Length: 158
Image (cartoon, rainbow, N blue to C red; front, side, top):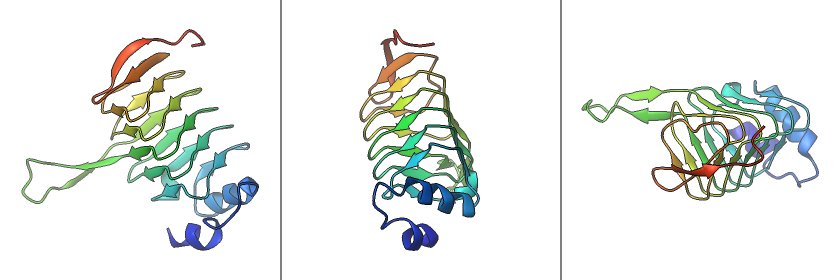
């Protein structure tokens, strides 16, 4: 987005409030206390909703051709990808299909992880570094791998 490039990409870390303002100007639903790093890339701001205290870390790719909702106090760590679109591989024209992504409260998407179209990540779940979530992740589950598999249950799950 050219607006982000001109208005926010160059900003130092301390200008979180300014970056929230810029995203709201372009239609994103951004709560108080949200932290979006200046190097994050958001494809279509009107399809982004972030609840209180959530974070999009450095170099996160938010490829939101469909709505992406990030719950309260959830963190999407550096270089992770949230991808709400894919293509029909059976179609000779590879028609685009989009499905929303929903990330619950107190979730951690670790470094370089990938969340695919239509995935719902329930509250308190963790997707480990470089994990690939193409299916829903359950409440408080700790997941890793490609495809992501549940390793155990998080003890702090509320």
